[in-house]
Image 1 (cartoon, rainbow over the protein chains, first blue to last red):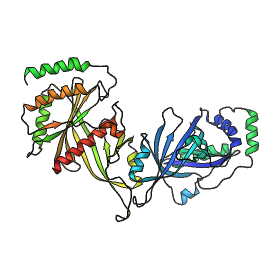
Image 2: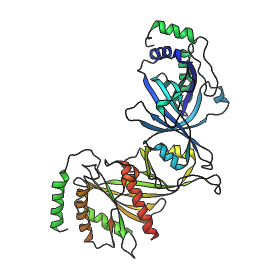
Image 3: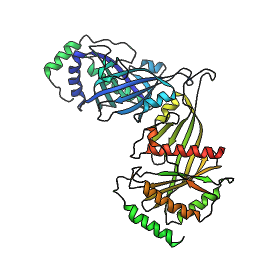
Image 4: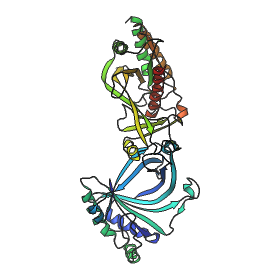
Length: 217
Length: 241
């Protein structure tokens, strides 16, 4: 299970966001370069159509692969009132021929993306990860070196935290509390809920840049 | 047991037991299966005799071990409509890797290793279901630098004996090629010792073509998974035969 919120930020303000995050989190940033392949079951395969994602971490000296299944979001009146999406997820490290394996099972490549950016992972009431990435598409199959941004000038910000059935409310509260610190720069909401850029982003970014690197709070 | 085989074994331990450097705690196991003589059937008495034979070789008895293979069957929404899927899809849980799981597509010669959470993912995908499972289970032994696992093969929810297997591992060397001579000599001694019991059958080792599965010479648990699937194929063929 995980809790998730997303937002967008203009690329010109990413450096300011990084300064803010460095100050808030107090941990080193991790570089991200992840090749994400979304696979869908072929026609007639399975009880229902299914999707699975293969994530290849290209930042490592030896690329490492993960299989990820994203399940349905928590439903009900209580869930709808939450400002954070709570959904089931399962991940598994897998050897490098996972793509060939899923093709052999009858899965097809639906789309692939290259996410490039950075992330901070820290403890603040929950183990929170803030990832800031440009989402890139590939003009040719698997051509990660030729990837170009899907939305030039705009980057995706995702705040996630693992959760369980007995603690997700605490995790939701931790994420919501943390996101308030980012409000001057960007608005975060449940995936699928449009946010747009924040009007105060330019001023907030200028302030952060003029102050230099922030102090750890 | 006569003095001669014991002397040969001591030579084996002394010379070959210290052959090469100890690269890691992982060896390169050979997995053998019992081939009954034509017209005879496998039975639990043979397994008992095999255990006794191992124990007569001054083996140090260890704990129990268990490996399992699951055969999967595709789920199609409409059985009459076409679909692309795997017809020979197997899952393997190895005794020595409790947090890992292995999948093999025999038709396309693919083997993958994953965390055990992959099983939860496969359940959620609901595209394949378990058709039947085979359990390989028994007792582990140590003879010098050799580790032996001897056991029975049964279907889940059944005690009917489907086969007998023996896993022999020379711990100091994980290279397939470098360990070959040592393993062959050990197995010569083993077969000679076992032959004195005049059992209706013998152990067989078939070399797996690891390169077919894209596996390198340095031995890994993926190699073991491939070997078990190969043995399973022989056992099924023997039962059908």
